[in-house]
Figure 1: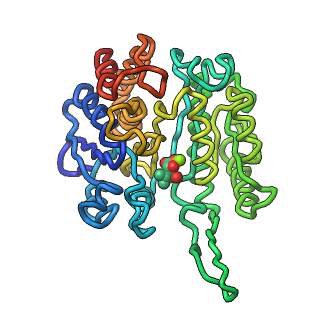
Figure 2: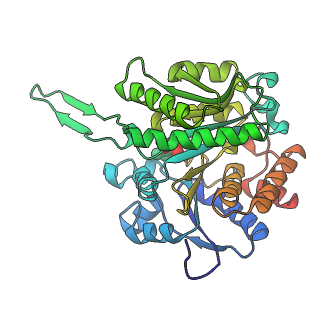
Figure 3: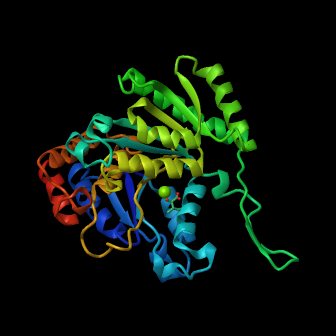
Length: 366
Ligand code: IPM
Ligand code: MG
């Protein structure tokens, strides 16, 4: 937080691939809806590796900590495939998430009315879809120790990772899911859904960490959230149900790995992964990290073809959750909605607009 002035700072970390193209459009939107916001720009991922031989430098991390919010573009690409694993672009992003302790990753899957027919699913299944995935982001198999690749006496190699969760890690992210579900139900969102409150998923049938996950979520529910409906489901069944009847869900709570997979799946329900924003939040008063759910898309990078909506909607989430500017956030949301309603489409949505033209279409509706 900026302690010595009232000015709020948004740090842009465009990253790699289509990251710079889509964050440039979010930046233009920010300059209009929050002209007093101090915008800074830094390096993350491959871009940082090229400049400093590190995917996240200590000084960039320090600057991120001092910001009120961070808007990331995307990281990674085949160019850095040969880099040592701890120097890869993704390692920079994981270090940023871990260092900021942004453990609760909010990934809304919302189907804009104009895009209902763009989904791979039948329109009726996704029309009016409004679900929220809460993904644990700073623990689990992404970070568990030990991990590595070793050579066995037989000469065979063995790769291993550790899936690990403490009760505290489970409880703190579950609390966020319950609180958000409670608030959504109060706002009339997801009230008609079959699993109307929190749907928590794991693989308690085969994993010890899954057993603990289920126990801790159940306990917390009994202690503090008896008014919010809770359902448990195995993660594989959840993946299946998500394409069978997506509107049965309201808030889905998942660990880091299952949440990663389910959020890509949920993205396709809404028409395109190019539409989905996300917010990663830690304790109150600490900066949030905002990222499009899509990756760096090296196949279309540099062509001006990427959809900037996920980045623009990530800005919308930053305005809402970290910068406490709900009016500006509403304005951005309505502009995206109106641009889509007027027929603005990038290639991923079956249209022909360039990244910048899509940005123009949103800005024209602000
Ligand atoms: C995501 C991405 C990241 C993840 C990668 C880029 C490390 O897939 O944010 O969903 O796996 O968390
Ligand atoms: Mg992912």
